[in-house]
Amino acid sequence: MKKIHWLLTIAVTFTVGYWLGGGFTNISSLAEVSRTSVQGSNNGGELAGISHIESNDKLASCKPDISKTLANTYAEIEQLLLDIEENPKNKTAHIKLYSIISEFSLTELETLSITLDSRNKVQRDLLLPLITSQLIELAPRKVLPFIEKYNPLPDSDHYLQRVKALLAEKDPEFGFEIFEEDLVTTDSDTGVPANSDFISILAKHNLEELMYLLVQYKNKDIDISSELFSVSYHLETSDEFSAFYDELRKLNDIGLLVSPLMQWLKISPDDVFAKLNQIEDVDERKMLIDDAYHYWMYVDPETAANKRLADASNKKAELTDILSRWPDKKSEQAWAWLSQQDGIDINSFKIQLLDELSYSSPDFLLKHLADVSLDNDEKTSFNHKIYSGLKRRSSEEARQFLTTLSLSSQADVQALIDEKETPKTTPRGSFRDSINKGFNQYFHYKEAKAFAVAIDNDDAFSWGYSVNRKDQETANQAALEICQSNRQKSKVTDHCKIYAKGDSKLFIL
Image 1 (cartoon, rainbow, N blue to C red):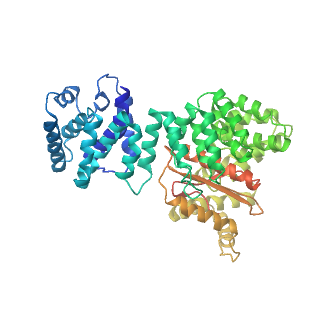
Image 2 (cartoon, rainbow, N blue to C red):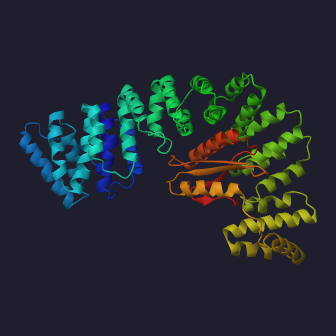
Image 3 (cartoon, helix red, strand yellow):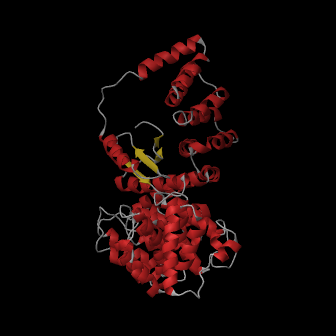
């Protein structure tokens, strides 16, 4: 079954993708189809992993006849290629082509490879992933030279990095050799030539050796923060996180110490804070504990808030900070939690929460504005914020909201609109130029992705983004972590928040 994992990951991904009409335009989505089929299979047969394409009986009929001569086998391949060219959705031909090549010896495979230069693009694109997958099984060290000569996606690095990850999974020591050899040609412009799967495979095999090599990349002024986050996403126990944290301490870079915190907090908050409290430097300890609480608020806000409030000497100041950090998407949870607190002026803190969410969640304001006591000026201010939030979504929605107010309230809001929306001549600060430049780079990457920023009142700032993640939540977390790392290096006091999800900006700088 181990062999089929390799073949299906590359071969079936591309052959199935071809008859679905996808070509090679979206490797990641096709790879997901392949992974799903492998994970869902409990059949020990060699082709069980693609049983969603054909029944087992049909697959058995696609098995090559080992009694055929080699010449007949090559002739059958030629006919199958012609059949697929004529009808790209001929599933039986795709599966039969796969099953023949998956039985090839290295000599037979090399003989077939010689014919690639004389073939048209369609046939090359069909054969390349099948030959590559079998090469991974038979001769891993021949794979990269083969890919350098015949890469079905020469304008994209994704295919090459995926193949490297497969090679590392088959032979982690070979993976380390590849990673070390890449050091020679890598610089700060190209970045670390590895995807998250490759990094996580090496980390599981030998974290200490991986950290040694990452330091060599760091010594060439190459940013390794994304690779460190990739490691943290694949650790499973608190002991693994603790060991990873100890390795990071050796780098003498406080900005990199945030890498394991968010994922570690999901497993054992107590272990995280016990480790951080061992830091001797008071300022460093305070900064990292503050960051840990910030991440904990993102991971499990109610538990984190209860702990922080119980330990606080100044509960009012702590509550203010807690509400400012509560994730917007869990605003109803924050409202319910706040309503349960005793011995505080709940109304004032609910007003603070409404204000915190006024930009991103006008519907939340509409729902709960009647639940708090407000003077006339406060009502006018909140009505204007609701109007502005709705207007960003729809001018018609904003206009309809105004019509629900009394005439005097409409007049008050309109006066505020005229005052606040009059064009200003104040020049844009440099932080906008820098963040916009970074966003322009980020914009061209694929989703799931997120962009995070932190901006102080004195215009000190930090930003960071994460792209090509498996889902939006993972992208958000990674972007926040990268921004936090940069924030510490730049001594920015404001905490990072998500500025964009995908290509959609959540607020105006």
